[in-house]
Length: 142
Image (cartoon, rainbow, N blue to C red):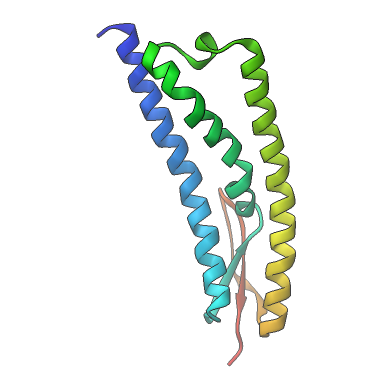
């Protein structure tokens, strides 16, 4: 197998992995918010996971924007693009990471405000600590 084919296969695998790692927590955050809006009995607020939808979006966009040319030539992104383009991609990723922090903070305050408005109570027994963060669980009393 030639080196270009190996690089292309690795590129496709990287794109698939990156999209999966971005879509999964983003979908989880969306479902948690829908649970809150639908007044479910148990609602989860995942503070660290809230960073993923916007914090990782820059890396996903850069990867999707830059990888087609690299996959076409069968080389790594760093070998196809100039150092200035790579610097720009790094800045985009960094700015999206900072936007993700602001989004997570704002969304947490918004969610906690809705939880108080709807009468939810924090449940320490149901709260989970996982590799994706601390999942605060709130229960709506009957």
